[in-house]
Image: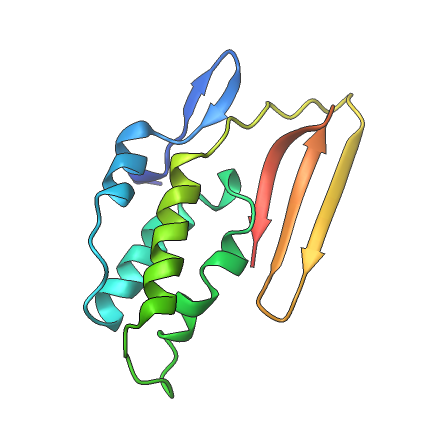
Amino acid sequence: MHRSPFLWPHLDPQGVKPDNSKVAAIQSMQPPKDVKSLRSFLGSVNYLTRYLARLATITTPLRELTKKEVAYVWGPEHDRAFAAVKQEVSTRGVLRYFDPKAETVIQTDASLKGLDAVLLQQGQPVCYICI
């Protein structure tokens, strides 16, 4: 099975983190001009889902624009969401390696906008899940 190098994380002694070049590519993206380019941006950002808290909540206004029944009209709320995503990407952390012997805690947060969860060990994130 062939896997895209875009999906491969960077592994080091501190933990798992996203590839810096992929993060830089997302940070340099311009606001999408249409639904197709917005979906492309959201797809790129989804690569970082496991590293980011609150992604589902932050991207809500952007995801709304991808719905068939919604006209694509980019407004100030979309500029704010787009900037917030890029800010969140720039402050991403390192995920600790999962230790099957360590105590594991799952914290969740649900709203009408989305569901976010984090898997923690020793108070440090192992993985984020955003839906």
